[in-house]
Length: 163
Image: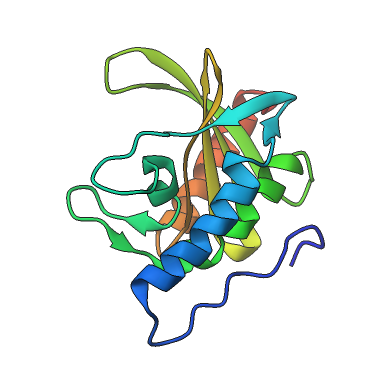
């Protein structure tokens, strides 16, 4: 494991949902909300809307999975303390990092940066916005997606230097 990564959050089985979410939120608040998080010297922002919850949408996006019905993703949640150091140390050569252009939900071109810790199958996704880099999500990559992200990285490298 990379020396700059903290330990994962310990989540016992069985666990109390409210307690573990509160513990995870402390990490989110420390590292992302109040952590002066920056990428390339520019602040990292997140979805700070609160919809039917006391917690921001950006928090849920780094601990849950699913589109219409979201569920706590333990592999994603345990690695929440890795988000800040992976962004902070994204130039580490042991990480795969690349940028792609994409079309957002409103049909606009956007630049998306991927920071992939391939050894531990963990991915952080940032989008370049006017107000800063937007933390879109971070998650544990499973199954065939590991190869898919490796191929995306290799394709981006052929196009030219990454970030």
